[in-house]
Image (cartoon, rainbow, N blue to C red; front, side, top):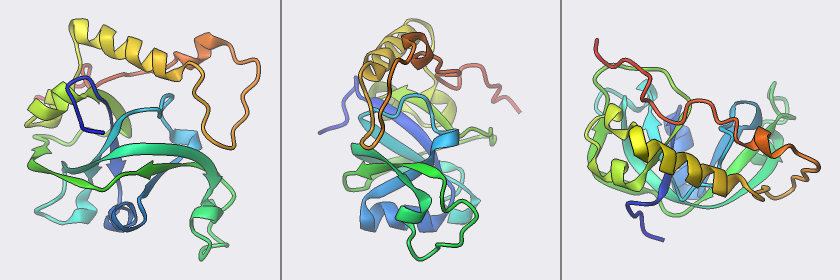
Length: 185
């Protein structure tokens, strides 16, 4: 699958360089269920790198990948070598990825604004120079909302059984973009 203007892109924090190596070598990324965005059925995921990536690679998006599948598992299943980890029994989404792709021009930030996840479009992703450029506003926000709503209908990750869920709960997405954040110093 190619990233197109209409692709749905999830921007996610990549907290540690070790996690990027897992994504590169093993082809997956994890999201704790308790902090996961409401919709994870997206086309691509892009990774915002933290200070752990060093002075030349922090506070930007350099890598992204196609999302090829989602399953629900435990941290213990992901990291069998860490059976005594405090969160070993907690549930995580394991996002199966295609190969990591590198942006020719990384998307940087002027000022750090804390976020865990937000959605954008392929069109915004292609054109962005700064994180604030990924914000979806106006008419595009309605298109994004409808796309997310369509993706949520009937989507159930592997190993998850959902019964009698009020459809309105599926639409409680919270902030769909960065449009309400102040990036001006």
